[in-house]
Image (cartoon, rainbow, N blue to C red; front, side, top):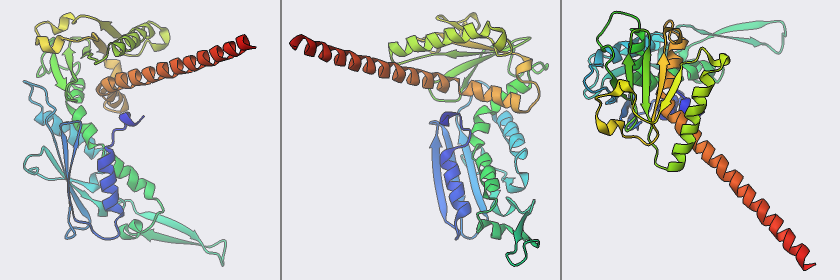
Length: 333
């Protein structure tokens, strides 16, 4: 589903356009996403193989210093990608938290590409041709590798918005109390959709206040929450994070501002244990990304369910109309 795609479609499109251009392009472009993420892409004909990407986000938690954690987590994630193609610029451009130099000339040069061509005049002969980066730019062969690299770079926004939550989960079980124990931490990754993280001795509880515009949406969503709770009781889903729903604020949020606790959809809580975040690999990444997308998932579920109900009702009305018309014809006869 599109909303679970970590890569920014707009950023990916621009980077691919720059990479595939036959001639160097002059670009100075800004992109805004999620209401508070900002990209600044710069490319110059004087540096045809370099693109400068600056990123800024104001999505931070009140009262919690996140600059270092965001920087460290983001950089570690970037270094796991293609370090030869990405260079950190320090200090970053004014007004931005991170500035990178993307070196297109290094995307495939470090690995080299080998193309085996069978000659028509000699079926058993092969010619081994090592393509340079420039040759690769003009060739469609093996372009999927570069598209993958650019897609990874376009996922920078996902790394940044998840960095603070990931840092908290990384420290789970340690003696680090920089984020506090039993004290709710309010995280805002999308305007108007805050959620809370409470660190306890054996688990981390994540609480989502749910708000909806329509009463019908509340009914659909609360049914979903009840189903999630019921599924958690099944042995098949015993390893999933336990889910609870309450129409009133849970005790962990006592003392939080009233405006944050005023909801019409209640509160959904997930308990995250060490087994859900073991290691720093895909399990941790999936847990973080699923939590960040929970609001979006619920919205999509409500939208799809409402559409399904409307289609069923429309079909039922059409059937009743046809049956009524047929009955009237019988009476006339």
